[in-house]
Length: 246
Image 1 (tube, rainbow, N blue to C red):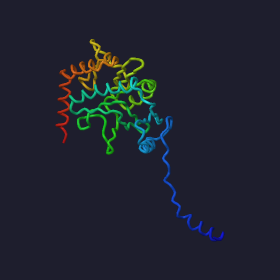
Image 2 (cartoon, rainbow, N blue to C red):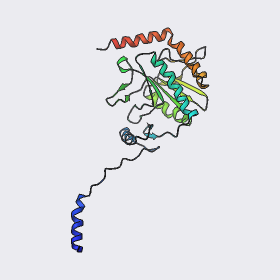
Image 3 (spheres, helix red, strand yellow):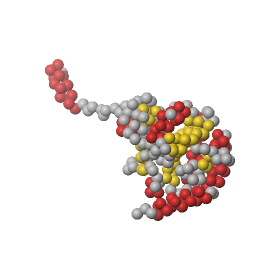
Image 4 (tube, rainbow, N blue to C red):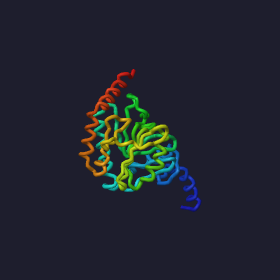
């Protein structure tokens, strides 16, 4: 083939080269992103099971250890799940993203909310995401204690999440905060040492048993809460709220 023919052939074939689609950058801890861009990158990374946007900054978790996170997380969900089983109209989610505002989409370890049809504060959008603050959020914190007790606390308070639990595993402490007049106050223990939710009557916690990983002891106290008059009244209110829907 002559040089001129080679040049012509190259000229003719060039327009038929197909360019690849633009590459979506991966999420990286410390990225500063809008919520829309955070979700775009998150959805393009199905191998990533948890990522959070807190005050416009991306956080990716480190590998999860059984004793410091996996086991406590399971016990917390079991406690909340038993309450849900006895309280129609209440839902529990694990690792669900919440669209709080334009700079924050956390993915708390556990949360509990009242169904929107029964008067809950959070709503479900058309994509199945929670929008707005659920009534209760819980975090298991070992290496993330500083974030949980500072940045996340401010975000949850600002978005009107009424109760916030932090299980500080290494410190052997359970913090339970209640939102009062725009501030989080510690939920006081009753004379018997039991913590009793204000948003979810009957949601009782033996924090000492929880810290010992004594799940049977935790559930025993919860059963007492579920048998209380205040829990029965709460269930009646939820049922009445549903009946009042058009």
